[in-house]
Image (cartoon, rainbow, N blue to C red; front, side, top):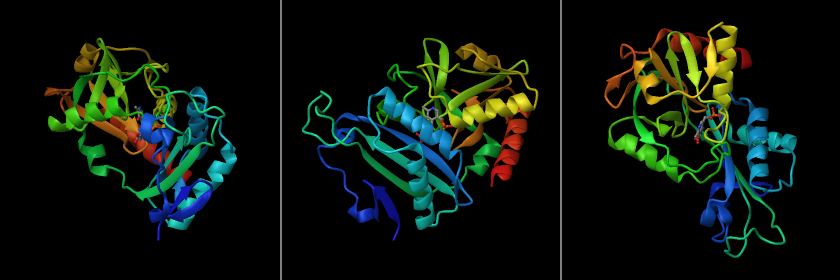
Length: 281
Ligand code: PDD
């Protein structure tokens, strides 16, 4: 039977329960990571676990383990569950304590869970592209923290789904921040733009890889704020994430982006990304 990592042990799914006084359950008081598994290997594992520690640190959760220890546990879990392609989900909660907004004092031990899931890369969507909607970014002001408080993202995604779209492209006033669970890029006059790294976005690992690839391909990329109008006037748009890789956005709110099909720069980056993946495996 598939195992789950739960409080220092590998246990059967049925044995892993959330305590009703766990702060993740009551307050969304925790952080998480989603890591891609390809050919049985966790991709960019160190970067993900470093970001997990950074998120925990930003909300003052004191980790009682090391980055390398979690890396080993994740590798072991993938091995035990014999997953070839999918994801690992890791969550750290501040811990279990009688419900009170105050941090537990004295501090309690954080609760870590991790599981694996088979999930396939959305190859068809990577080829055809997807449609999206614009949505007000109603999330909090610390999206640099990969917090398990995802209500703003969940509501945006539901709005997109109701309108038959795949993703919500979020904006504060007119400035585009990111997707509900992805980073967002446009290509305008041949230049790639994506929101700069600050508290308004998550600094996606896929985002960083795409920026590195753009540099290698000698395509100019600017981490600069841009507006809804820029998206509509641009030639191309795409989203990135661990589960999506690079997916072209060909339509937003019924407006075609460029000629309404995946653009040349996006496809070049997709090709370079595939080459990168095959070098890593
Ligand atoms: N989401 N921005 C947001 C708000 C995200 O939730 C994510 C990832 C990203 C992309 O980050 P990365 O390239 O490191 O996956 C950007 C994950 C996949 C999720 O919540 O399922």
